[in-house]
Image (cartoon, rainbow, N blue to C red; front, side, top):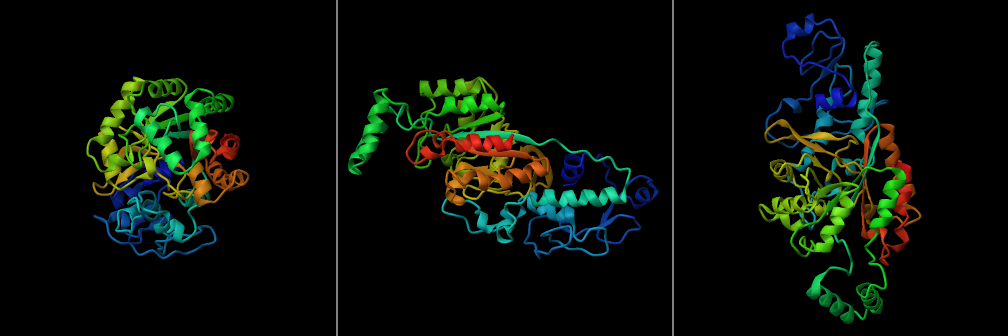
Length: 418
């Protein structure tokens, strides 16, 4: 946590010591952090969390201060009204997700269970806000301090859960699609499906040239996450050995970074994620370092243990499936801290705060209101020089009837984000 706050957020080099004599003799800028009072011009009384072993329920009492909004782990007799380091660690490490909770129907930790949702700061990068106020105090206390900030960065990510609605599905799935349409008396589906298969119309999910044109126009950094699992109830992707699907992946990878989208089914089958990563590596002829969980199936610590073992160095799953906002209460990338082993790992977490599906189903946005709902989140990330990660899907930018009016939402949000 000290690395995240001092080095990553404020650009400050620092040294830690537990030797009181060394601390007293040091003549530069210094901060004492301990449970007991220390003869120091800048002292932060520790709450105790960072000195504990194991994981246990923590008492959370939310408070407010003129400068520090919505803080907890209050302490006394120090330069801050609370233990900034312990409170930030609690949120960023996702400590609460290691504790017992009532999962949703997909066995996920819901936003409603989180401290951020319950105390109404889910749409605020609270840790960044705290650090910003902490910086003001540091500058006042140490006028010669040399603080630097990273630049704001935007990363557009696109999930390919189902490359095409009708094309390249194989004989059995195509016949099954026709049968379902007949049973539902869905005349429009029958007409659209036939037109696409006869190559009279473009597939409704085929929005790839539209995406690439926007990428080129705004010089975007884009990562595509491909679902390459085995077919299942929640994994209705194309077979990974489908030649045309592979051509599509290769084509998009000429302009963007590829990432794996571990399937829903991989959460129940050991070794499945490795298989899917190998499939993508074989198709793209690249090593795969980027990942985002399909269905936002993020489970601590199992998901991250598995990804680390498989050589993934960057994960983009830190967000909620239905609610936009800041799951870890921060808008900067950070290295995952393994609470069980009590160490910082080399797996970098890139939180996302906006997705097309969350806008529509969580925020109940329309194509006209989506941008205005997303804007405050974008503004927060820009304000604190963060990394804005958005999620869109190829089908939401296509001509499928259920999303046809949303086609331009992606570009409008891109224009705000760059």
